[in-house]
Image 1 (tube, helix red, strand yellow):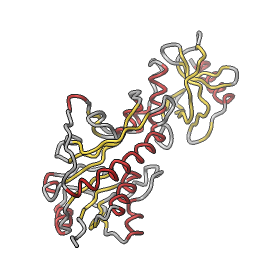
Image 2: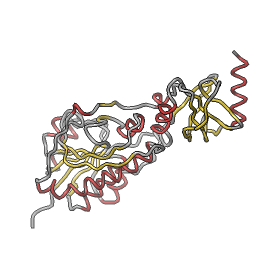
Image 3: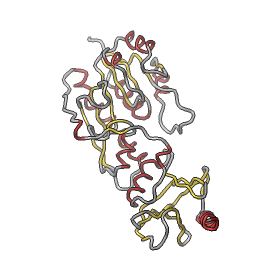
Image 4: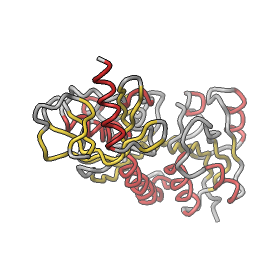
Length: 306
């Protein structure tokens, strides 16, 4: 009987957990997993690859630098037939990629939304669909030939968190379907025409600042893209930061209301540049819920100070 194909897996987050489980279920000999230590400054709402490795008895490392000689030596010592990257946060250098055929799972329908935070960018740009793409890894990010893709819809009120759940399932389905042919060396290689998509960088909490001059749909897309468990879209009033937790587009017109936060009939709204509004059902400051009455008092105080 032929030996099971061996792999070294670079993985993190829910996609990392689910795709690692697919490899194990598919009979792959996972000889080493490379993952990340959780960042104490980050809200950890996702599953742990390290915990899965402990449960399955798989050796795992959490190096700070993917370019280190020590990591290269450890991966080479595992003598992998394949390398896989499933939401690992560092680019793999050419020296690692030269050790074995390497494949990455990306959270978009390549070539669209290459780069970091693809689900958040897709929601922010108002895309109506995204998905998961398994592709060959190259030194240039998300540029290798496509092996398989699975699409999922983005509904008009979906948050990035909800879409990420769909993409996680799509990633699992994509790998499960493609794995037998991939291991047999018969998987297709489809063109990844980079002219048809764009590259996007990482996002920080500061990118959630709301520009109320923007149309309501753009502001709503920002809210959806960074709604909890992400840091949230925020605005500042009289030196106080207010973060939107829940909101929907409102059918009401803003009339003569000024752009920004407003209270109408004891309800909180966000007034946007096109005269449309967001109906805000949950607003926080400092992690504490703000009532319509409290916001009205703050708005009156800010107006009186001018």
